[in-house]
Length: 327
Ligand code: NDP
Image 1 (cartoon, protein in one colour):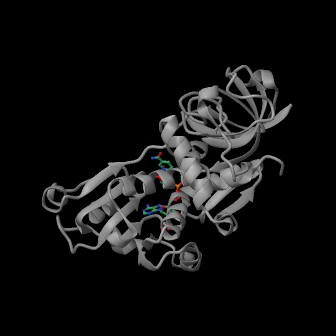
Image 2 (cartoon, helix red, strand yellow):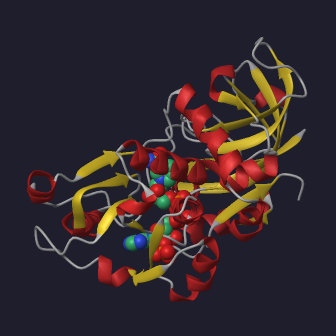
């Protein structure tokens, strides 16, 4: 028997409860994993609280990422004892996920633990940190360099935001953090942010073109804030857009694109191809300093996930929250 958080739908309302399950309850898959850590991401918050239509069928074990040790494998890609990471692929949405002490998944969804990481570090990074690295890679592929100018990071005190601030600062970028929580400034300064802008300032409606301010931007917020960022980009600047914490709509004009050569690049972590996925994890392992793990992460037990899910949707979680299956 093992412990799992199970979501059910009763009269249209999502409920989350801890259950004792057997391995035979798990969905089909080639690899059985003893999950050591999972993590709480914004999408998990939407799923567990039922705020967003994330879960496609009930009952469902949520948890869009996990790290642990292979217990059984019918694939020659992995053998018992191998340490592995999973993020995305619809796990925790369409296929039972990481908020459980065991998970059974397709071999193609797993990647071997990169050198320099362990299960705990991997889930302090988690989907949010992996997405942050994809954003950094996207900006650099567009030509951004530390001497290009200032780089804006929105939702900075959240998961993707925090890791983006850390990674960009570490690489020598001048990072300006947008946060709705002034009390997070010391935390963000410790991650390397040089300047701060209150969320309310960046969420104001913008004219089609504003003063040119940013060489690059990582945006997790969307909506009005993304429209303002586009209007404030320097000539040739690039925005990596990966989130919708402030809304999924985007009302803008073509002016930043046709008069300032601005690029808006999308970033998806769920279906990211294996080669890019592996590269991003290798870079995370190599580039995140040891000190970042203590600053970024805080651990909870599986039983605490329903409350933490409400907190992440309300924007009350700072940095990354990992779920320790041994607690
Ligand atoms: P978090 O909740 O950890 O961070 C989001 C941050 O956004 C909050 O901490 C807060 O930062 C800010 N925020 C929250 N609500 C609002 C609002 N209404 N308006 C403006 N800012 C707000 O979430 P994650 O970092 O896990 O995810 C961030 C976003 O990225 C989500 O939309 C998520 O779905 C998306 N995402 C997308 C992925 C992809 O593959 N494309 C992968 C991972 C995440 P502060 O307090 O500093 O203002």
